[in-house]
Amino acid sequence: MTINTYAKFCPNVFVAKCPEAHAKGDIVTLTSKYGKEAEVEIHNLVKQTEDAYFYSFTRCDGENAQTRAEKRAERYQGYADNAQKRSEQYWEASQEGRDFLSLAEPIKVGHHSEKRHRALIERNARRMDKVVAEMKKAESYQDRIAYWEKMADKIDLSMPESLEYFQFELEKAREKHQDLKEHPEKRSHAYSLTYAKKAVNELEKKVKLATLLWA
Image (tube, rainbow, N blue to C red; front, side, top):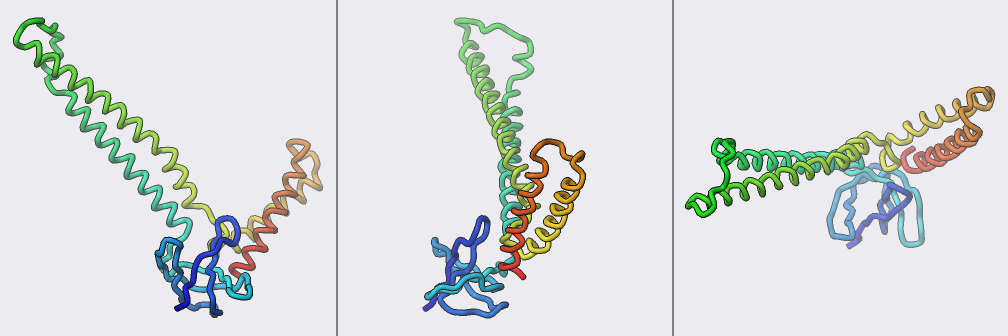
């Protein structure tokens, strides 16, 4: 039985490593190092060795870097919502004996009510500590939520649409570089032209890779 696996091709991109040749459009099953299987559609042959063929692919279930980012953002949002809910519940609980405590009655030392009075104050103090802790926990998830929401809109080389996207970005970068080259007064600093050329070079590499993967 032949087993098709994953292989790292370049940053953000895994390809299918297959012991047998496949045609574009073939559906094969890939097995991760953890034994998890996924059906994928074969796209381009990007590399070949003596014992394996390496293909770009898309998952048949539609999962990609964007959908995974969306799921993570949703998961962290769920964590934040639950923490906020717990904070509110602790706040409600901390209102125990509010009417009595609002009278600001001093603890009557030696009185039969002393123990209950102290216990009530201590319970509510612990609850307020938990209110603050859960609020901080909810806030701590916000950066991660924002990050994964941003990643959900990112197009990278693991997606077929990256070819058109990087071609478009390359054209813009070339126009900017040419404009700065012809109009020095538009350069905001001494390295503006250098950085613009660097952006062109990097995008040319991405277009080349995207073409190999998805054209």
